[in-house]
Length: 312
Ligand SMILES: [Zn+2]
Image (cartoon, rainbow, N blue to C red; front, side, top):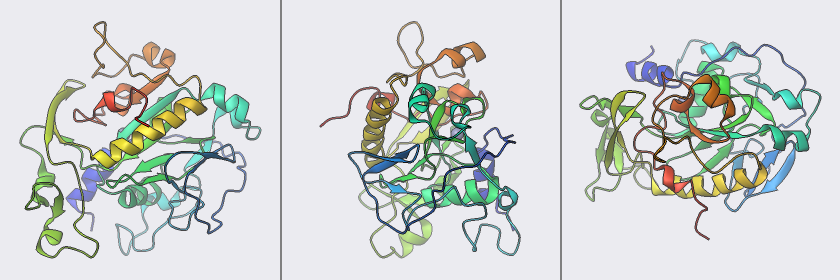
């Protein structure tokens, strides 16, 4: 039976769909190898300064799978809706005749940041792949682990009208809520040191390897697309990984500027862009800049952490 929490997850991960064509894609199946420190761009393994668990890794999440990824899904005993989706991606417009790294570098000019409302990247991939029939290039777990689930030459289905020209990332997080409505706290509590959120089960009996980090220990409040929201902090490990990934993407894609939409005073815009603003923007976006229905990555997201080069 679908729980209320699952329904919240499904609703929160809403993105625009509608892909129709399915041109052939170069083989990119798992080879069983461990390949930390590379990101795949048009079939080329590009070095990055942090480990990356890619779709080729046996521990990875492979959005090239044309079936469900998990047998013990969120809907035991029933086929998950996303399992009927043959492909959860398609080549970008510039790549429809085959991968072309030069044209790809010209085409990619936006980086869209999401939170997943799934708490972990494992659950995020399960919801995207098995329930929603959707995809995203990267997932960033609470412990800072970075997953790549599709080559960046692919048009992932994560941000509607921004899909053609963007790279997307889902950051593991519980989400943002109106004041007093942060229901996730009913399932999680801070540990004795006030550092880590534990599920109720983990608080009673910590799992092997230590407690499960869900979110940073403090909250931030702000208004996104006209809605006042409260949100727990992202984790320091997530910011450190995101800094390095942003460095990498801005190097690889010269049209991707290291900036976010700003108002006349230089503050980061907290509203959806107009169609014209979005079409001309080159840089880093929150999902809420793309869709007025969206709030991610929320008021707690510290834009300054990624709008400057990371520390050496
Ligand atoms: Zn989103």
